[in-house]
Length: 477
Image 1 (cartoon, rainbow, N blue to C red):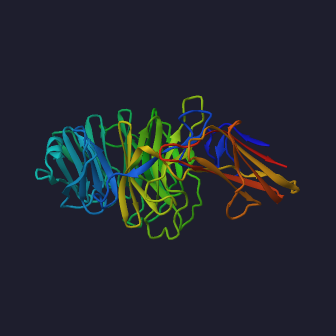
Image 2: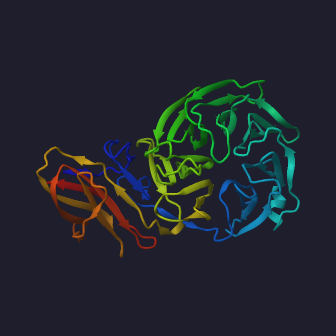
C-alpha cells in the first residue's frame, strides 16, 4: 500500500525519485495554500482581447495606477488602466522594446540603439502619446537582443552590449562600466547596494551562437571596474528570479536554476525536462515575479530556429517556494496560460503583479495575449502524476485506488488513470465510484503481471468550484 498524505513536495526530480510528498507531474494544482490538502488553482484568463497583437517582453507597473506593456517586435506600447481597459498608446518610431522601467517620474524604454522616455503624468493622461521622446538618448554599443534596466543606489542602469549605461536624473553616461568583449549584458538585479550583471557570450539575434561560458559580475556602482565575478558554464544568464533575502538565477537552456551566495553561483534546482541540442527552453528576463509569497517564472519554448523539435518541459508559469519555513522549497507548475492546455509551443514574455492580481503575457504560434488570474474560474485541466511504483514481484494483479476528499462540489469529480510496465500512455479507469459517507472516490483495476505502476489523477472543476483532496491511496495486490 502506498499512501499520499503529504502534498508539499512539489515536482520530483524524475518520475522515479523525489522528496517526500513530491509528484512526477503537477499541472495547475494548488499545493501551498492549505498544507495537508490539494486542490486546483485559479485559471489564467485572457484579458487583453484583440488589443494586444505582439509578445510583450517588458512591462512597467507605474505609479499612476496603470501598467504599460511593450512589444518585443514592432515597437507598440499598450496601456492597461487600473479599471482593466486596454489601449494602444504609442508605437516606438525607433524599434521594438528590449527593456523598460519607471524612474524619477518618467517611463524609460529601450530599443536597439536608443533610449526613449515619457513622463508618467502624460503617459496616463494622453490617450495617444504625443509628448514622448523615442530618441531621448543614443546607445553607442547597439545590442538588438538585450537591454535590461534596473534602479540601484538611486541611479537607473541600462544594459548596452558590453557597456552599462547610467542616468541619475541629471547626468547620462553611456559607458559607466565596460565589461569588455565578448560579454553582452543580458540581465540586471540589485544585490544590497551593488548591482549584479548577468551576461551572454554568444553572438547573434534570433538564433544565438551557443557558447557554454558566461559570467555574473558584481559592481558597487562607483568603482572604476567591477568588484567581483563568477564563471558559469552555461549558454548565458537569462533571468534573475525575485526571492526574499536570496538571489536566484535561471541560466542556460537546460532548465538550471542557481542561487547566488554573495560570491558564487551554486546549483539549486532544475526544471525537469528532456533537453537536447534541438530541444530547449529558457526564462525571459522579465518573465519573473513574486506573488503571495512564491517566486514565479515563466518557462518558454525557445524561438531559436535551432530548437527544431522544442518543448523539453511544459510551458507555463512555475512557482518556487513553500507555505512557510517548516516546509520544503519546491517547484510547481502553478498557472498554465489561457491559450491552450497542451503546454507546448508557448513563450511567456513577462509577468506583472499588481496587488493581488497576476498578469502574464504570452505568445503561441501567431496568437498573442495577456492573461489575468481569474477570481471566478478554476483551471479546467489540472492533474497530477505519481512517481513510478515498482516491485520485482510480477505476480501482482489488482490495484485499488482511493482518493479521500474534504469537499466534492456539485458537478466536480476526479478521474484515475494508470500506466503499467512503463506503457507509453495512460489508460482511464472507468469503474470508479463515490462513497459519500466515507468521502472517498474509489476505483479497482485488474492488472496483468504488473511490476511498475504510475497513476494519474485528473480534476474536473465546475466554474469556481473544485475537489479538495486530503489523501491518495494506491494498494496493489
